[in-house]
Length: 113
Image 1 (cartoon, helix red, strand yellow):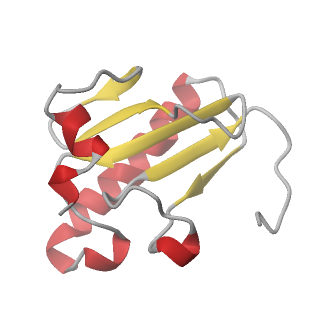
Image 2: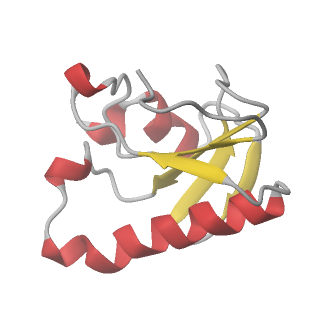
């Protein structure tokens, strides 16, 4: 269950995080294993396991997460940045609570891996 992940623990204040943004719908914090000079995760407060678990009732929340990702990128001084959402273990998802990676601060190659 998404609420039982490390991200759920962060949302409940049981584990500290390096917060960069917070509102009533989401939390953004620095990744503990950054892949670039800027690597922030934006997570919903609603415990969604992944993007594939979202439905039409989550449309506003999903849009909000992307707008917050852009806001965080600007706040971090990024003109160019990448957003990534992994859905499922074969796609690289390791924490099963929906999260948007905001990555930048260096040239990023494509394809990512």
